[in-house]
Every structure is written in C-alpha cells, then in structure tokens.
Image 1 (cartoon, rainbow, N blue to C red):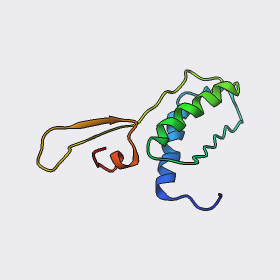
Image 2: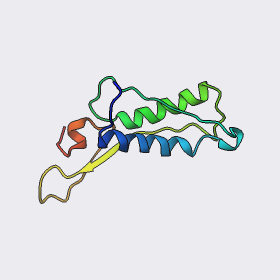
Image 3: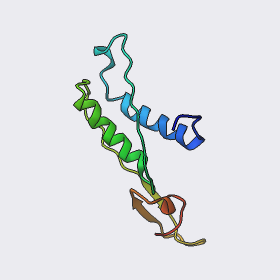
Image 4: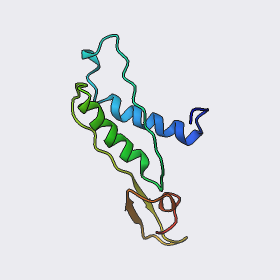
Length: 103
C-alpha cells in the first residue's frame, strides 16, 4: 500500500486537490490541515471524477464548511480512425476509451 507514487497517481492527486481546494472555506479553518485520502480498489477509467465527487461529499459530511459541493466527471473526445473529421465524445470513459480506443 504505501510506497512511492507513480506519475499518474501524482497527477490524479493534484487534480483532486485543486478541485477541492477551491470549495473549502479555508478562512474558517485557521492553522488547520485538511487531508483527504482516496483509495481506489479497482479501476477501469473515470476514477478521478468519481474521487472528486465522493471526496467533496465526505468533506461536507465531516462538517467542513464549503462554498459548495464539487461535482465531477471525465470527458474524452477522439476520432474513431485516422483521417476522419468526425469526433466521438465519451463521458466517464473506460480505460480503453481514455487511451483513444473506440469502446
């Protein structure tokens, strides 16, 4: 479980942090530290969006004063094949769709 984070884990951590930081009323928490831990047991894509939404709800449930809840999802746009100008859009994509493969 512990150990060093991979690059994609660090990027996901930054994304979650940036999304939640704007909603927490930090002025009402002087000299405090708010830590959010996310444990992903299994993934097939879309985990960052789900983590943001769930963590926002967890902060509200914990009594942390927020400006508002943060709702999040992931969206990916891709062309189904080379040379085509037609775009496909997927909301909450699978790992294959995140990689540009048509699902």
